[in-house]
Image (cartoon, rainbow, N blue to C red; front, side, top):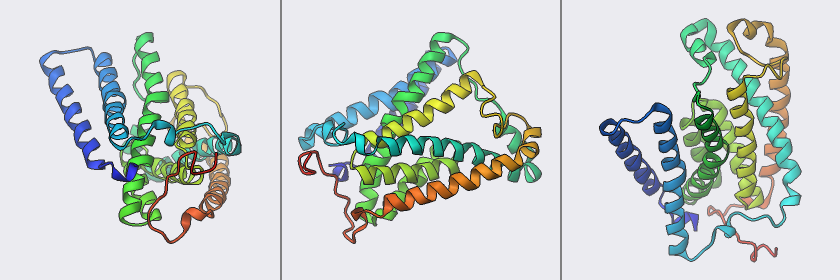
Length: 279
């Protein structure tokens, strides 16, 4: 299944399409907003959809083998808890990075504090947020937790697959450390549930929170929200407390996820469908 899909193929196809579209926009100039939307749709929508549709047909499997609702009630509460913990951890980890970088590299800290530019046009803004919330999480879970985790686990070990897929997931995002750690949680959730729906939902709600904060810049949660350099020192104590508590709880959660039989010595990752799981 996923183990038979070549990660380098989807990377190569994605790069080819991306570079081709970038070149095309130099020949046929488009507005910046339209160009960004088209690139996102191609990279996170068209290419993954074509690649996985072709691979599933080639192997005579359906998407319901990996994404299904049966048994979701058993892990839904855990996913909701992970959403809250992951958001709290990410916000406080952002403070820690600023706290470390501000004395040694003020320019980098200032860059991290800069608001992310979003389209001013309400139509393009809605499309961009929709892509960030829905399209990107689905595509990234199939690619990183599906193909890359499976391939690397087969070639090395389960922990090798988790760490490599999470590292590359982190490198694909601006917040490398936070995304790397979030990738580990997503991988453990997938291995625990044998269902891509669980990490997809976790990823969607995680992205939704930060997409809405980027679009509307709310002050909430006021106690730990960092919006300017002065907040780094003023809100150090609550951020340090939230970071310590969320790190401890996430660590315990990760330990619980990793205790299951998925850690047997067999190096391959078995992704069972609903029938083989008795559902």
